[in-house]
Image (cartoon, rainbow, N blue to C red):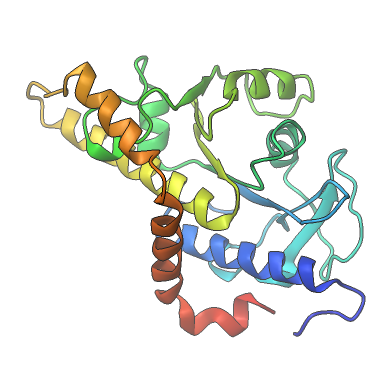
Length: 251
């Protein structure tokens, strides 16, 4: 389907971008049946964001499958297919969208490697270049059970602080960015860092950890000016892998 007449072009574009991101998360095998969630704030004065219609496989997500809600969890119109929202998804994402206006897109995953690192007392170790992207730039949130309580939102936000990525202990990963490209870049690197850590530890040999100076230097390199150009190039390259699906996801 094309953009509904009653919907703004801005919202429809956001829907198409988010549907593509859902499909890329599936392409890179970061899904967990119908659970986990990705949200995207719709540009404009109202604090509204898009989230998946609960029950749709990420591989088949379409722009019309996304639900527009406000920070209180109310459906606010322009939703093409109706449906319900994952309650835990609302709790986690609404907290961050309200507190961090700089983070327009938020991704939460339950991958095997992400959960494995989340279960380790020391969390993400500085073992690889991918992991060093997050050196000194990674938050942790203590597990409180399934995120259904609105009271947990304040603690989530406090733990995230000024960071863009967080390990939810005994749970999974969370990454965010100013847009879909930046958020995808964050979760991709965090997931790969977790995969590498689990594989390195499974070898049963001594691990080599770079010096503190090298860790800090590498983290600063990842934060250098111009990284946004690389992020956008990576996003476009990833999109090309599912380009034949474009007419379907933007429907």
